[in-house]
Structures are given as C-alpha cells and as structure tokens.
Length: 201
Image (cartoon, rainbow, N blue to C red; front, top):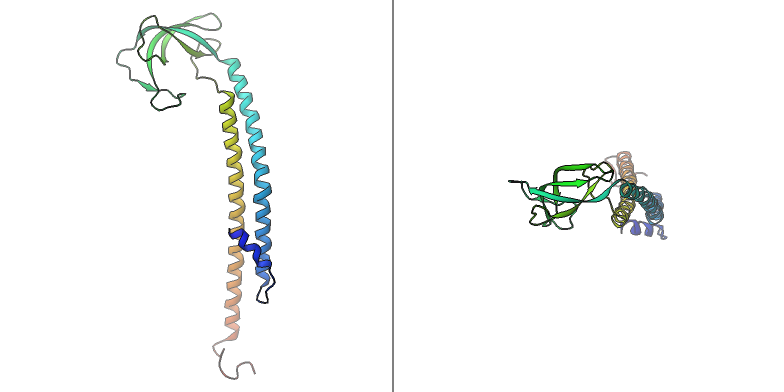
C-alpha cells in the first residue's frame, strides 16, 4: 500500500517537492520489480528445483529397491518409534529382527523398522534397501518433489519482493533524513531573529 501511495506523489501540486517526485519514481521501480522480477525469479528457481529434484527421484528409484523381509522376532523392550515417512504423527513403527534377500542375491539379517502393528514370527513386510541390501529410506516420489519445487519458487518470489520493499524503504529513509538535514541547515541560516519585524529587509 505504501508503494501505491507513493505513486500519488506524481499528481500536480504547487507544494510538491523534488524529493516527492523522486520517491514516486522509487515507488514505481519497486512496484515493477515486485510485479515482474519476483514472479520471474520465482519461476526460474522453481523450475531449477523441479529439475534437480526429479533427477534425484529417478536416481533414488534406480538405486533403491523394495524387498520382502520376514520377521524373526520382535525386539524385546524396543520402543515404538514414529514413522518419518508417515503422513500422520500417530503412525508408528516398531523394531523387529528380520531376514531379507538383497537385490544382488545376498542374504541379510538384522534389526529393521516395520509398519506391522503387532509383528509375529513369519510375518512378511516390505523394506527399502540399496543394491547390496543395506536398509535405506523410502525414495522420494515425484509428487512430493514437485511440491517442494513449488514451495522453493514461491519462497524465492517472496524473498525477492521482501528485498525490493526493504531496499525501497531504505532509500526513502535516507531521502527523508537528507530532507531533515536540509531543514536544520535552513533553520541555522535563518538564525534566532527569524520571524521578528524587519528581518530580511
């Protein structure tokens, strides 16, 4: 709103100062940058983030494999842990000792997290591993990558707009300080006799 009000300083007015016109030009430049540069920069950042994230998605889906694990036993005394990939904080996983076969054919055995609510010996569940059977996180999906890219672009646009508005405020603040300094100099030149009869005659 202050940027819009600054544009009104262009209206013809006998009391308009040169600094008022300068502030109007600063406001116009800021408005154009916010309206044009911020969306363009946000789009560029979003597109770059989308490209990088989608490459990461393809790489993760190539390197990570979903294999079937078999529960050997539930680890006694293990605490129920939150699922970092779950959509709800109430979704939990428990730790079990399991066997699984890696994509390269090697047999693996060790503790893993399972989504089974009440795991028993012989139960089967899916687990993500790399080629050699080391347990990894679930690969990033394409939709989540796109969401992150959109948020990155939106954040870049907001940051650009904020920097432009901050720069405008800084310029106007310096102009106002310079104006006050000139007023102080004018008062000093007028001296203590300003306003008395015969002053300046």
